[in-house]
Figure 1 (cartoon, rainbow, N blue to C red):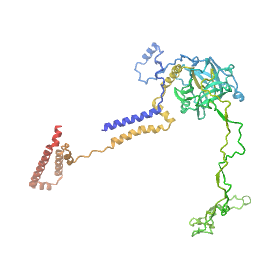
Figure 2: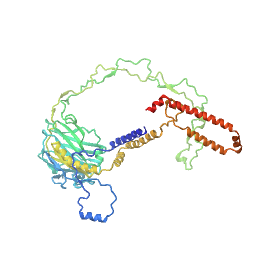
Figure 3: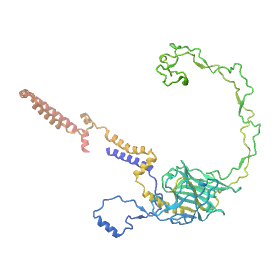
Figure 4: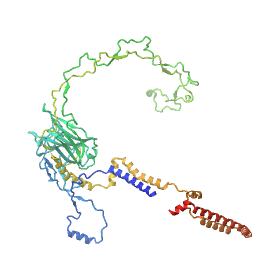
Length: 607
């Protein structure tokens, strides 16, 4: 029974620990089945001569050491399949990219220029030597850089898949990391890329203060007016804070399908989805009717639902001058009231300051304190009757309110057909784009961008992600701290986890103490109980007799010579006692013989 209890306690403790670790741990290897990771041996590149020299120098076997984590070898991803743009920056240059030299209009000269610096380099804490990316190097400056696609992307019957990686190496205070797909126009000049340059889609993270955003904005062309209007997708329901603060590389993916559905993913997890027709603001299609701007409310339009009764008159007994409260005529002054004693008196212990100038400060008066004579009395000073509500007070008379017989309701302008109405059932068919660009302002530097990819085939995009971001995630996972460190880090971010940790450790200990140390002890069975149950009775008579004989011998040794002489003179009494003892033994043997012959005892022996 005790082993079963202990086993249950162990299972309970393991279950609690598993629940705790589930809260802390995160799924790091999303491409576990797709990513092929090359592991370099620690001895790779070391010559045989160097190895022999090391062996000669260290004849004694070295102490065992914890093997280092496997080293992930970086291999630049190669685009395979249909794609319109692929950039991994592993050439180490900005070839193919154009840095803007534009100046913003209507802006101070100091910040009007797009003079923010861009560099191609590895991450500061790179886990993949050789993996380079585009880094925003300046803070509090405008940055703009762009590149042409292999060919323009046209929205027809194939989806759009846009993905790229972002790592906020130094965190992010206020700034964006979004990308723009620049609209194909005859006058597109990447040297003059700026905030007013037309774009088809803007997508990516943006943060300022405690507002964590993930933009998906597309510009929709009104087929009647030809004007473009920004349509903003609904905000994601997921909590995005971790992606901005954990200083890890995250993969941002946008998928827009020909059926007008869209998906926004981070690390291959959907954080937002919907329809271009119903889940954007303002809606793509305008209302069929609008309020007539030339319609005005008539002057005699009555919007009052209630009016004062014009036929009502003030009652003759209505006294508008009656006060709200009157003295209580039934009140009686309490006994012991001190009419001649003021409530406050000058402090008798106060002394006029030595520098008091009566010409400048006026006549000095001691500060007022409560009159000690009033402490035991019901009151001091002139007694006044307390005030009570006046039962005859009615206030100013107003006529009662009645329904307005001329009420016409709240006026609204009439509806007319919307002259700009249109119905676009295919907002997916956006304007073609032929360039990708980053136009950003940030108060934080060292934002890392990598592995831009644009395609119309989802499998191709996922293969690119597996060969690039998947490899990077595998390297970061291999270098991550142990479970204990992750638990401490998680508890720092979520203090309530400390309660879970304490309960996980303390609860099993408490249960072990309760179950193992406070169980009921089985009481010794009486002879009567042995007879009722026919349970085998332990043979303790010989031990009891031996103990009695030892006690008798000790008493004889301690007794005086006179007592010994008395015992010797009474042999007859001792013989009588011996006879009684023999009779008692015979009775006990008879009782045991009866018990052995009982039917239950015989049955138990047969069994």
